Image (cartoon, rainbow, N blue to C red; front, side, top):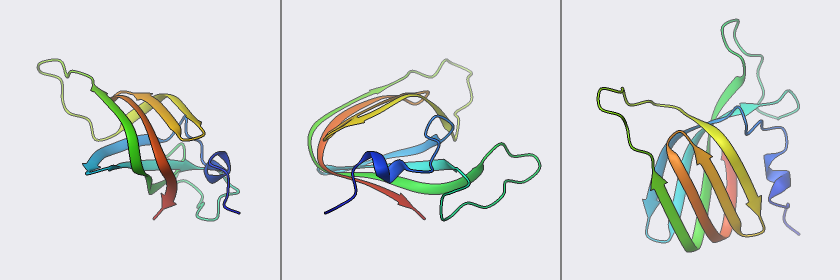
Amino acid sequence: MGKSIASRFDNIDIAKSTLRAVIINDDELTLEMDFCLEPDHSDYEAPGADEECCWHPGLLKFAGITKLQLDRREVEQGEAMQRRFAIEKFNIEGTKFDMECEWGDIHLAARSIRVLTE
């Protein structure tokens, strides 16, 4: 039997992780992330003196999407585009996923949700 969705986030501090990019392809959505890994994660390395986390690139991949709503936040004129977007709310329940972050809001339902660290 496969791992539960929640267990796929073991030893990843989602509240401190950041979104880097949103990629839409047919019935798939990929979120490029900088995960904040906790010490028990297999890819954990001690953070540098000027870092608060062990940052590690990764992906959240959603396939077989049956519902998708993206609400991009507007950038104020003169405001610089960011490369990392802080996560404000994050919830996965069964096949439903909801995230609010500085980039915007993402709501979806998908048959497959995978967590990948690179």
